[in-house]
Image 1 (tube, helix red, strand yellow):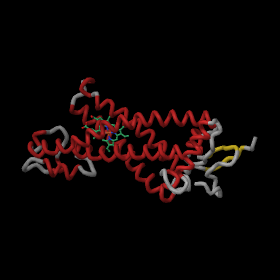
Image 2: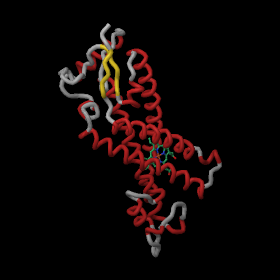
Image 3: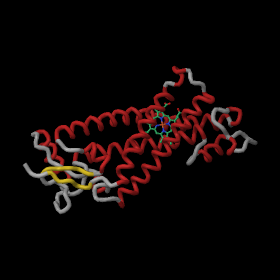
Image 4: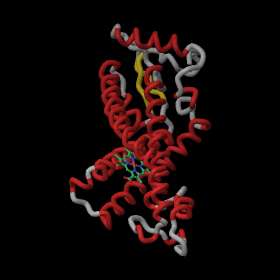
Length: 248
Ligand code: HEM
C-alpha cells in the first residue's frame, strides 16, 4: 500500500465561503418555510411578517456578499478554488468524467485533490441555483420591503401623489398609488414564483450534496468532509490533479 501524503487544498477564503454559505442557506430555507406557512401559523402582517422578511433578507445580504466574494476569489484563489477547477468542460474533461465514474463503480476510485469531474457538475449546478435564488430574492426585497438595491426605484414607482418615496413602509396601502402598486405586484409575481420553485430545488440539491459527500467519503476512504475545515486532504497514491500531473 502506498504511503499517505497530506496536501494543502482548500484555501481559507474557500473554506469560509463554504461554511458561511451553508449557514445562510439553512437559515434562509428555515425562515422561508415559516414565511411560506405564515397564514397557517397565524402570523400577522405587522409586525410579524415584516420582521420575518427583514431577518430573511439580512441573511440574504450576507449570502449575496459572500457569493460575490467567492466569484471574485474564483479568479484569484489557489488552483483548486478557480473556475478552471470548478466548471465542467475544458480539455480532457469528458474523458476524465468517464474514467472517474468507471473507476468509482468498479470500486477502485480515482483520487482528486480538488473537485472530481462529477463534483464539478454538482458544484456548478449548486452555484447556479443559489445565484438564481439570490437574484430573485433581491428583487423581492425591493418590491416588498423597499430594501436595496432596487427598493428606491420601486418606491418611486408606487408612491402615491404627495408621498415621498423614501418614506414608504411595507404593508401600508394608504401610502401607495393603487394602480401602480397593482402593476408592480403583477411584475413581481414572476420573481416570487421562481424564488418559490427554486427553493424546492435548492433544498433537494443541498440534501443530495450532503448524501454525495458522505458516500464519497465512505467509498473513497478519504477525508473530504474534514478537509473543508482544515483545508488539507490526506491521500494515498498519486492524485489525478496533483500539481505536475498534466491531467487537469
Ligand atoms: C438559498 C437561499 C434562499 C432560500 C432557500 C429562500 C427561501 C425563501 C422561501 C421559501 C420564501 C417564501 C416564498 C413564498 O412566500 O412564496 C422566501 C421569501 C422571500 N425571500 Fe428568500 N430565500 C433565499 C434567499 C433570499 C435572498 C438572498 C433574498 C434577498 C436578499 C431573499 C428575499 C426574500 C423575500 C423578500 C421574501 C418574501 C417574498 C414574499 O413572500 O413576499 N431570499 N424565500
